[in-house]
Image (cartoon, rainbow, N blue to C red):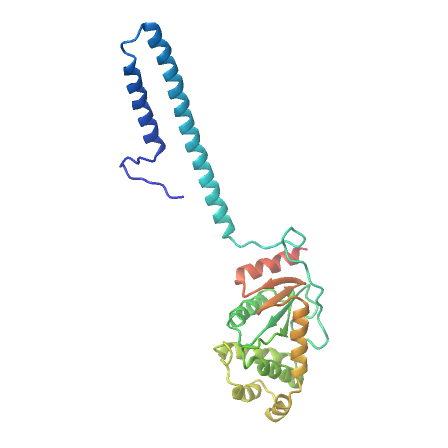
Length: 273
């Protein structure tokens, strides 16, 4: 709440109101200057009581208004501070029974106590900004967090489906390390928003991470991984995914490209449970 530090008198301030009341009391007293002493005493007493009551009312109203304004300001500020939700608390999201499958490519320690499953779209700009935050988490929480990617290509991102299929082809042909290296490079190089990474560049990128380009072409061009990617998407819909990125931290949904600090807070909270 902003305070006025000017020396100019404010006609709406409580101080101005009290001064005006005192002047009015003096004017009313002068009216009875010619009356009898007894009448003057009675009327003066009544005017005094009325004046004191009015002053008390003005001061009380000013105090109440000030307290209400301060409380409103504090409430507004606290609402702007992001907080980590607690499972089971009113209004908190419910955990989802989502598990790692044999077909998933796990990044990190396969026995880590915290599992992050992220539904992503390779042409989503928010997924691109979220990826480095999770990569940093993996570097700082080695042995504590494992990460799984599931595909959720959005229909208006025209290249997302084939890019997801390409990642699955790389994983099928060369395993976990090539799969994640391929994903890292796509996010590094795409400009996002639908066609930020040319489909023709998928072939040399696969070769760059050590995949036989001929075998990769066969897998991608024949659509060997189309159904797997679509199965991920349909499964995500069943889990309540409505946009990308959406992550599940030991089943707790975390929607959107949350900042690293907030993501870290969620990881720390889950580790204490």
